[in-house]
Length: 149
Image 1 (cartoon, rainbow, N blue to C red):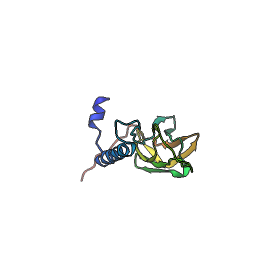
Image 2: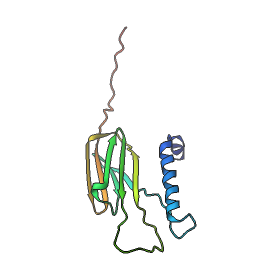
Image 3: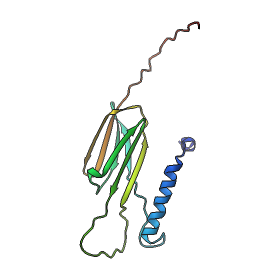
Image 4: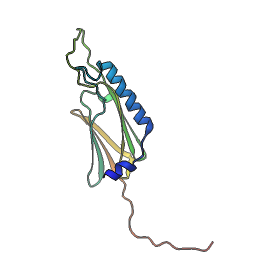
């Protein structure tokens, strides 16, 4: 497992974006030593398989369904969206801020061959469920005939 993490390619654009997002959150929250926590808004996910499907479960509490965008490209699923801070007419004086708001993007490398055209998505109770039909690879032995050129 540890060797897999070392050999996985690093997406420098994603690292750069996350660093900018982190620094932006720190400056907005009053600094790392303040009572206001700096957080990167990245929703947690589960990825699992059933007999026929590969499923991505993403926790998105407080997000309108219309604010979520899904893109399936090759073996990658991108989930992006935005959680907006609730606004009221009264002035707020915060003592602690731990709920993260703002835009997010998760790029998930899917661990099985899937048919992107078969994707189905449902959103309920703050959870996004995205299911893909797994592609069944023909792994039966095949005889290859060698020909003369």
